[in-house]
Length: 331
Ligand SMILES: *[C@@H]1O[C@H](CO)[C@@H](O)[C@H](O)[C@H]1NC(C)=O
Image (cartoon, rainbow, N blue to C red; front, side, top):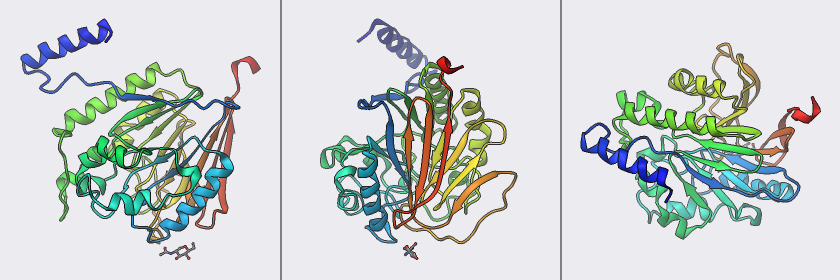
């Protein structure tokens, strides 16, 4: 353990003794290194809102993910949350884990690391179960944490736990019970998430900065924009030159361009039940694409190019978007 870490621990212990920070000084996001090797391109799939025992085309989407995953030779899969319906997992031994994950995404190309965040439906069950290392023993691919960083040679992905930001779940929980263990008081929790994200973004030297959360910042789907994230998260992304924000929550595929920065918002929340049939007003949003049915997304990044594609349930490309970033040497 480094001496800096030692000093931080001593300091937090002292502060804890004075009752200033009962838990800890906001901890850094856990970091994971992912080597991409080969030709230096990073390739991964993004799917959200999926775990329904294969129903509502989940299995069809899974099999097309397998095919495209093989074609692209992906490094990993990103899950944007709402991993298990309707109410998350009941515990570490909930058969839904096998029935909706392990036994559904069976293709060889999908036997890679899955980096997942929690969605609001996951909070309706035993949220800690999904975070538990026990699940990683059952299926090595599984890695779900609240907030964390995945570092690759050319891109850094920052995963953010967005559910505790949304006031409605606290004020109007309807008939749902949420598992808020370890995230209340939420003001303090969300404050520390934002602080940790800021400090991770500040340190980042990555060519591409990608932030992943469950809730949309911008969306014209059923739920629309998430005002809490527009207010508190978006300014941080703009200030730190984040390139892409990816989310689920709305059961659709969509792309919206930020009007005040180069940020692109991608919703990939179409892993199973879709076809809500309600689209909101554009509300000033610069909508590039919207599809109400099932599907998923692929991301391919080189030092200078980003290419994103959406696929439907038949694996057909229904939208693609690309951009170039000049290398300094080119200018
Ligand atoms: C499955 O996908 C097909 C093709 O998009 C669609 O017509 C059908 O309604 C979907 N089924 C469900 C249950 O959503």
